[in-house]
Image (cartoon, rainbow, N blue to C red):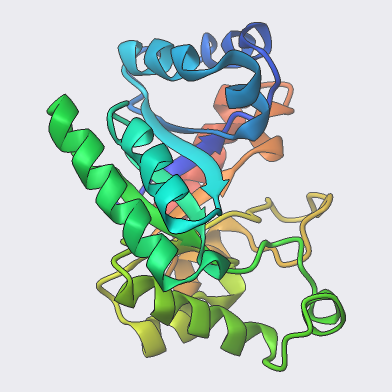
Length: 239
C-alpha cells in the first residue's frame, strides 16, 4: 500500500463539509485536508470534530511570516493532533526550522504525535512563465523546486508539497527519505481547472509520489465515495 490519498475538503462551512463526509463509512480510515477556506470559516473546532470522528487531518494553512510568528502559530497547530501541516519553503530556512520547533513544542505539551511538516515549493498553479516573469527566478521549474526541497530538508521539514511532475527529479536529488505529497491530481480527461501541472494517480505513482491530494474530482462528483474508491484503487495498484 502506498501513502494516503488525501481528500481535500475545499468547502466553506460545516454544512457543506458534513454533506460530503457523512457519505463515507465510519471505518474508512481517511485522511482529509482542511485548508484556509474551511478553517478560517469554522476555526479549530472543525478540526476537533473531524478528529473525534476518526479522520486523520492535513491542516494546510501554508504559514509564511517571520520565524518567531511562525513558531508561535505552529505551537498551536502542534497541540491539535493533526497529522500534516504546511509552510511555504520560500519563507526560508530559519522560518522552516522555527516551524518545526513550534510543532515539536506544541505536540509535546499536548501529549500527541508531532505533525509532519511539509514545505510548499512552487504552487501547482505557477507556470514556467510566471516563475520567470513574476517571481524573477533564474532557474527553470524543476531546478527551482529541487532547490527549495533541499533547503526545506536541511531546515528540518519532513517533506514537500510539489507537483507530481517534479517528483522523479526530487527523489534523485533530494533522496528517498523525504515525503513528496502531490496535489494537482486529476482523473484522465478531467479538466485541469486552475492547476497547471497535473497528473493522474497512476502517473503520480510512477513518478514516485508519497501521497496524493485530491479535491474537486471527489467532492464535486455525483458519488464522492465511488469517485474516491476509484482513484484510490488506481493509486494503490498502479504498477
